[in-house]
Image 1 (cartoon, rainbow, N blue to C red):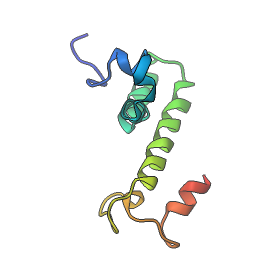
Image 2 (image 1 turned 120 degrees about the vertical axis):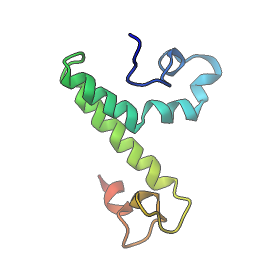
Image 3 (image 1 turned 180 degrees about the horizontal axis):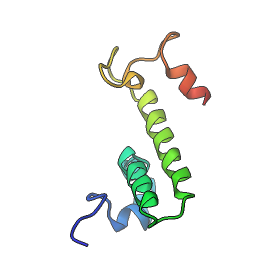
Image 4 (image 1 turned 90 degrees about the vertical axis):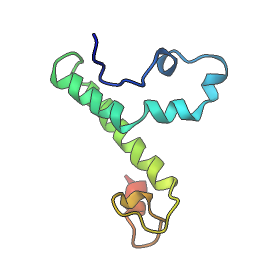
Length: 97
């Protein structure tokens, strides 16, 4: 196929060996919003079984968890979970889920 759903996704993301087993960057890329979206898309086209939507949901939850633990600003304009955690932020609800 000339068009790919996930252009930056390569074999090294799936077939991990050696030092790549400890590469957090690859793990973050695998458990990403784009992978979750691609799984949903391929499920809708019946290229994947309907159970793949569970994996897509898991990817989305992991992205939110990464965001909530990786805040670098006090207030983020578009993604509340990228803001600093406080007693009134959405972080506590997300972590409970």
